[in-house]
Image 1: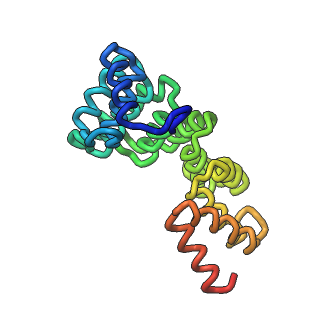
Image 2: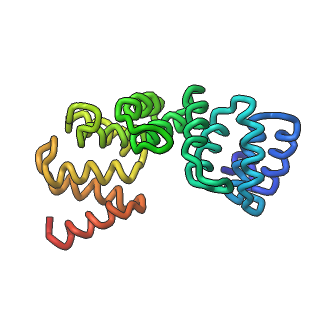
Length: 219
């Protein structure tokens, strides 16, 4: 970020390493993050996992979530949904919004666990109430499609809007679609165009497509 100084990943790495080697969980998480993302150092998923694990063993919820992501994607480890689920649950139970979102996602799509919209809804709600835009978007989608809840376009719009206000491009595109077809709102091409433009400017491929479609068809 460069707060009070010029951004310097090499210096950040140096101080995070000192902190991590002194047993500080946040330093260990940050060092893992830098290795995972190649910030100030060559990307190394194995070292990322090593430092994340040290932090996670100290109950650092961000590190627990990060390990879950690695197992879910098979990044530096063999893909293992059961392990991903285990780490996400630890993170979620430590009230981490991303851990809660990811645990909800695993339940919604049946990765490492039997599919359960009820469980997905539960964890998305906990995360959304912590202002996680992806959980807010996911709740909007569940209400729009009636997945595990009674279909309710008004509630869908509510959750989409909360996510869209945080610049979530998928949510902005979804609101545009609701206005374009008049789902839960009065049809309004001007509003649809406005939301599609916001989504497109956030580099969302569907927002870009839908914006192009409206120009092509004069809507």
